[in-house]
Length: 161
Length: 432
Image (cartoon, rainbow over all chains, first blue to last red; front, side, top):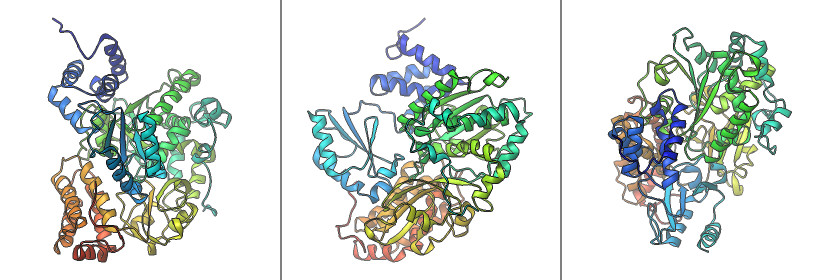
C-alpha cells in the first residue's frame, strides 16, 4: 500500500534520491534534503518532516531533533525580505547594534517578528563570516556589508516599491 | 625565517579576476602539483614533505598535519575518508570563504594531493549553511574538474579515483568541532563525540577519517612545489609557513592578510592600516572569539600557535579582532558570552548551564542591575567550565571570560558600582 506524498512529489523525490546516492549511508542526506524541501516550500512543515523521515527510514523523533537543532530550518515561511543581522563581536564593534535598533524602529517589529504584511522580517544571527565588511547582514540569500542607517533605508524603500 | 613576513601564496588568487575558473587557474600553473604527485611521486614521499613542512591545522586546533596523517591506519580493511571542515563559524574568521569563493580549484588540488597520499577515494566538504556563494563556486569547480578528469574515475590516466561531494550545513557553530561535524554528516544533530577513539581511527561511518580545514589543504600544492623544508622556513620553529589572518574590528583596512607565522601582532595590526580614526589600541582577540583577549601591552607576541599559547591565549582560527580605546569591555564580553550561550549544544551541564548563566549575569550588569558578588561568581563559573566537558566549546568560552575579567577588572567593578560604563557615554542596557 502506498499513501500519496503531498510534499515529496515525484520530481522532488527523484532529486532526493540523487542526493542520497552521494552518501555511503542514506541518512547523511537529511540536511541537504531538508534544504531542498525548504527551498521549494519556504519552510519545513510537520508533514514534510514525516515524509522525509519515512524516505530516509529514520525515526520521526530524530527528525524533530534535527529540525529544531539546526537554526536554518524554519517551521513557517519567512518574510519576503528577511534581514538576518549579525550581532557578534566584530559587527558589534562597528555599529551593528545601531543597525539593529534602526531596523526595529523603521520596521516597527522586534527580532524574530515580521511586519503585518509579511513583507519584512528581522532576525538576529551570530557571526556570518563576513567581519571584514562589518556591520553585515544576510538579506535573503545575499550578504550585504558596510551597513549604515542610510543604506538600510535605501534597501527598505527599494524593496517597498 | 622570512624577512618581510609577506608572501602571497593562497592570497595571490584573491585579487585576480576569474581565478575561480579552471581555465584561469590552469594558466597560473594550477593542478601541476597534483599531476606531479599522482604521476611521479609515491604516497610516502608526499607524506614526508608534509611532515617536513611543519604545516599545522589552520582551522583552530593547530595540530601538526603530518602527525595527523600518521595516525590513520592504512590496513584496517575499511575505506578512509577525507572530510574538509569548511564550517567556518569561529567569530572573526572569514578566510576560508575567500579561498572557496576565489580559489576553489586550489582547495580541490590540495584535496587531490592529500587523498592520493592517503589512499582516499571519497571526500566530503562540509560548508556552513549560510555560505551559499562559496557552495555554488565549489560545485561549479568540481564539475569543471570532473570534466577535465582531475576528479572522477582513472584520474589523469592513472588508476586513482576520487569523488568530492559538497555538503551544506544548516546553522550550528558546534558542527565546526570535528566530531560534531561527523555526527552532522551522518545525519544527526551535532553533538560532539567522546575522544578517544579519535576520528583518524574511528571517524565517519566508523571508518578512519582525516579532517582538515580548507586553508590547511590549500597550502599542500605550494608545499609540493617548493618543498616541505622551504615551507617550514617561512614560519617559526614549530609552526611552518604562512597563514591567512582575518583582521576585523577597529582597524582601518579589515580583510584577509597572508603573513608568516612569525609576524608580530603589532605588525599585523599595522598592515591592516592600524587602529582606526587615529585612536589608541585597547585590546585584541588574536585567534577567534574563543581566544583569550590581549591588552595593548601584549602585542609584540609573534602569531604562531606556541608563542600565543605561552602568553595564555591561542592562535586558533587566525581571526584577529581589534578593539580601540572607546570599547566597553563589559559589552564586548557580554556579546562574546551570549554567542557561546547560544551555540552551546547542550550536551554537557557545565557548558549548557555555565555559558547561559554567564551571559545572563553579564546582561544584568549591563542593565545596571549588577551585584557586587557578580564578578567573583562569574570567575567561579568560568573556572568550573574548563576541562569538564566533552568538547572544547566550554574551554573556548572560559578563555575570554576569565581573561576579560582579569585584564579589565576595573571596568567591570565600575559598571557594577555605577550601573553604567566607564567608557561609554550612551545609557546602560542592551537593546537586543
